[in-house]
Length: 551
Image (cartoon, rainbow, N blue to C red; front, side, top):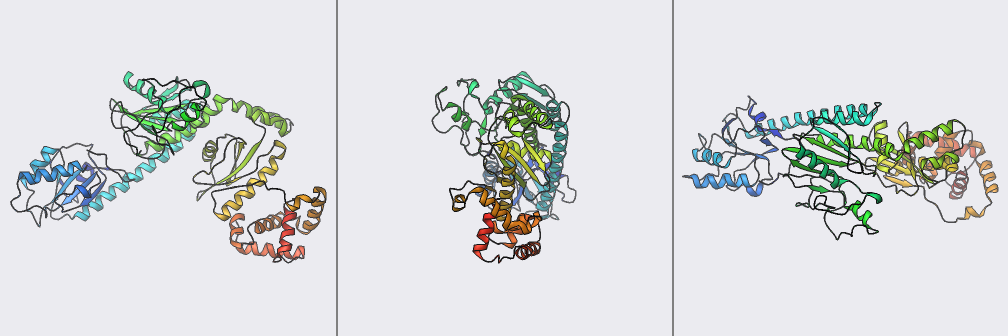
């Protein structure tokens, strides 16, 4: 039976639908298996419904398609096509076409193992479909509640004095199984939950090798026991970045943006081997061994840590819960393994004791950095966990939550790309003494990004311009003199700068500054009065922009 192309809603056990007293449904043939689930309901009177089924349906029919005198051969062919299409069950409506369910249909369903449900005359097919959607909505609500509670408990565990064991314990409890943290060398660093059998432990350790990103000192030569790149049977993974395996001993893996197992492999140890291996490695992989669901997640710190889980069954929301735990463990293990936590602690102490930023910057691991300002789209102010997730996505643990904005320090050599769900402003690379200016650049870039609805904007360096021909001292003096009437009002200066940068757009300036458009008009009018200037004149605008760039 093919895997059904299921919708993004939790399936409903057939027994739950049969338990609805208002429907009066009755199973009259097929297995009474509580594991039978229904993904949707579909009504069809086609003699061959196979082309119209996706799999997982409760197929509803009143038998209009059944010819007079139909025998066992007709019903055997009909039921076999439903089973071949992946149908979950067949609902047969009694009346007005048939007074009873045909006996040959009952026998065919029993022979093919397809649950057959009798639908009484008082129950319409629409009522059956509506009841199914109601049960799905209830299951979805329960799933969201379970995921929310798990996220809260995992975040609380990460704040404990022993965060790694606490997160693993919470994850194991939420999944009802085993959670293991593997180190860069493949050793088990910590674990929680019931210990599985030797076969499952070995399989989970091998699955961790599939997703572990190698470091230059840990490249491994492919061997039968540890393949370098798994090759999936199905080139279409269930979802990007997540993998699925449906039979013991067979692993399916995928990585966003990469098709696993395609293309020539570089020989082990060659100069491009590390980059090729990193590109081919999936971010997660799964398998089923001895009836236990195994999943491995590569942690995002790039140091070779892997989170492995083993659960007796797969419940809705498990992948989301495990992903939250993986993000938290990425932050925790990255800090402890690389020693950056100790470096940041030392840098903070030295700053508090009077050292200059330029003196403590080497402790953070770089000479030039970029400041990134991020703001979540359509959500409330970010919490520390959300901010840490942004830092992990950008590859830095130097994160600060400042109201509705998250500030991240990113080393110059690390690319800053767009992050789904966030609007980002990126400064130019700067030495420590210029970090305050870079912070201002990032803030202005974020404001422009929000105003123009761009996911990411950078403060770019310009080639030599006419303004660069003016001596800096003279340019600064001219800027101070020109802006003197409004320099005591930061709100007016910021509004004028933003308004000019957005080409005089009232609406976009209001969005960038988080104020009403009438407030923008009033401030610009006030600037024009104090400066005694016609702000509609392009020459005036150009001169003011020149001055504002010097402040």
